[in-house]
Image (cartoon, rainbow, N blue to C red; front, side, top):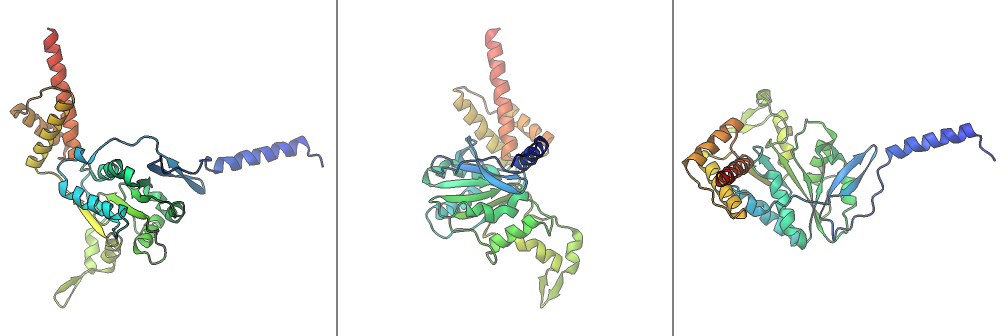
Length: 299
């Protein structure tokens, strides 16, 4: 049978349109050399895309959050050792090192078999597809979702809740879930939510609205809170960053009253005190100071 030219043209257009809906072909990931991947959604399907370069942040770079580091690092070490470990919720103020902590753990423990799959909040609905690709692998995977916040009823909310609870769908033993959020319960809370609370035998019992909102966060075995620094904590972290940068550049940058006052003014302009703000100030201050020293030496 000979197809006429018009029909052939139509078939080519249909195939071209269908091809656009399919994900790019990626070979099976070699986890022995790939330490992290992104889950990429493409129309009706999805795929794991290897991440070629990973931010070189270390645990030592994360200053002022020693207790938080200890809790998450110990849980991760239990996981790597094949021992019982918990899914974790890292919540609190922006810029305090929540997501950086997960990346730093990968940098340290990738040689021991740790791997990270980064999944956007809206793509958590695909958790079953993602973990199906990880079953049987001789590595330990953290499914990491950053800056998560839901509205009740979202499909991703329901899937994550089910995965954490394990009642309908549970990830395999080589998978943990780490989530970061600015909200402790991952869901907006309103004053009206408390109207359903009641006293029963001297104890406060939350109404259905609140119970539903805390039901997701309550399924994480570990909560780790990241709070804004006090001014003294902030200045201590700034000092450490200034000294570290100066040491890396084999230079001397004085930690004096002028530097402290500038650091405080910097945080006030940013409206925040955190490790991120401290690091940004140190970069600016050390850079400006050393540039001025070079300019003076030339004149």
